[in-house]
Length: 329
Ligand code: SF4
Image (cartoon, rainbow, N blue to C red; front, side, top):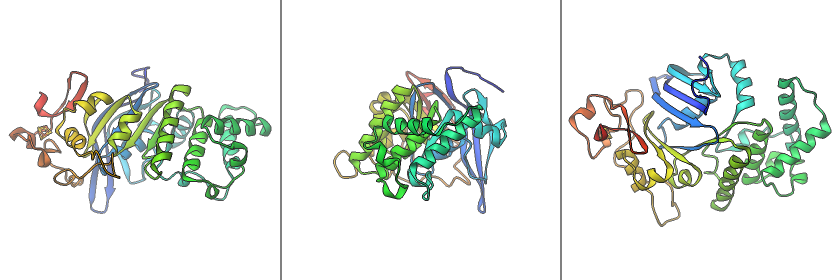
């Protein structure tokens, strides 16, 4: 099925994803709804195992081979990628979205210089469009893109191998390579957590600037509420494979509605080296092979009611927030 909302670059409707494991089927996502508008920056927040990375990978169909879509639709730039072949998705991904990861070195080929890798990316883009490759023009484009990501000394950096670059420089090269494809969407999965605080702030600023400059959408996946708030227009909180709350970023930080969101906000340390990281919330995340019945948060929720352990709450809209909790209807 094709475009349902032309303003949305991503439209996820009732999506469920399961991983087959030796211990049984792991329900990584359960009936997830998510819409990302063109030009919008959305942070997906949650603890480890909440499904946030699975959701990011699913949007560009880069899931592990033991994952399968069990329900729902996933429209990327108007096309349902659950129904496309791997080749069709690869073409769509190349022209629409790119993903950056916590360890950007894995994205680059360690035995090829930056210029070789960037020229290969340009050649691939031109080939897809049936256009002619010109090495001189491509080299200049690669330099321009490195300058777009504010890379100091781009003429020298482009001739280096990945191991000759710092963590911040590698992340900039990866972003520059993504920009070569003229994407509409950048998905970043914990892209700054391996960087020191100063470089982290520079990369976050850069992503914000690029979003404005290239009118891209950003999906920023993180466990760090402060980082999420600093980069996003809207925040989506995930718990145990479900979206528990989605709100404008300022609203979520000032007036979280879902008890899990409230616990996340309350757990942010205000003064310490680990500022911005999440402290443990009482109880443990559930076993996703046999998650709790009803609301998946109920074994840890201080407001639990009888109905919470019997039936799964539906998502309701309260003021500017969408929240999945019986406290709101
Ligand atoms: Fe807590 Fe019930 Fe709301 Fe779940 S539905 S978050 S258990 S109050």
